[in-house]
Length: 246
Image 1 (cartoon, rainbow, N blue to C red):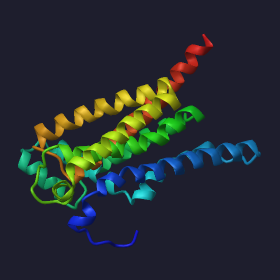
Image 2: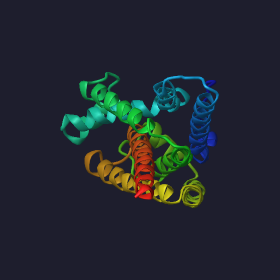
Image 3: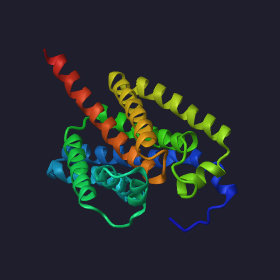
Image 4: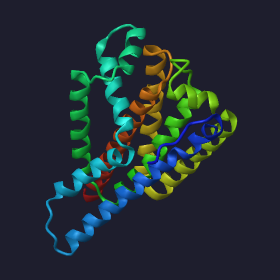
């Protein structure tokens, strides 16, 4: 992406466009899965792990890993069991601790396992989940108290036209929930339930352990929410398929 200067004017509605990054990831994910199925149908015998790894890496490649960075920093902070002030300092520390590395490895392996069982039904729902996670993350930046008065998340929150952005993002949530239920049925319902459960955990965790939200914590939520929603979609799909065979 070309470098841009953030100003009060262009930050005012930036959060309204944040979910569309998830739309790009969703399209790329669905397209890669379609390419995998077409390749297998035409007799190109790639190992399934080849496409599964690509699917896992798509969000990281498109975003440059910015949200994964927040996830890793947060894991270091949470694993320190230090005071609130010390946890906030760890979030700003550019060095990666042992728990960040371990957590990153576990996270990617979990995603690899989940994506190894994708179907057409689950990949459609997961494609939409990337938009939902960013919509909820954007809402948290607008609605939750800020842990710091300065920082990227605080700047976006302070400069946003909060009432209008809140209404736009809330509209996204309503439309996405309706779309997930229409397109995915029980899979969509599972994804919605899990998304809001993680959102509730995220609010409680940020308030009790950090005193508010930061950019890193918003990234942490986004990564955890996406993993949980993907797991919900795939597990529900497998259980549904098993029940239909009985």
